[in-house]
Image (cartoon, rainbow, N blue to C red; front, top):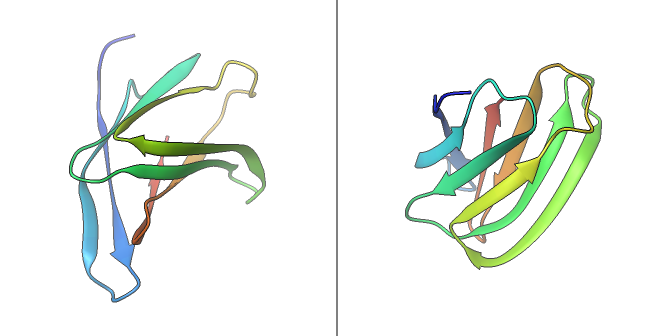
Length: 93
């Protein structure tokens, strides 16, 4: 699996675009992804399947990078909801 970053972006509570500094890699993956947030601290990451069901929920304290293990999930497309203390960002796997 090679490194193919997926870039995430979204909007904050005021409608401002945020999150251009977030990379999720490798994409596609079979076992785990790294979420690298440049310029923000990750508070929570939720993994959501295409049916809208939350299949993973992770909490962090003062980190800009996290590894999410996905090897127990069936193959498919998942959304990552990444929250810091100000904004919410959503991206596809």
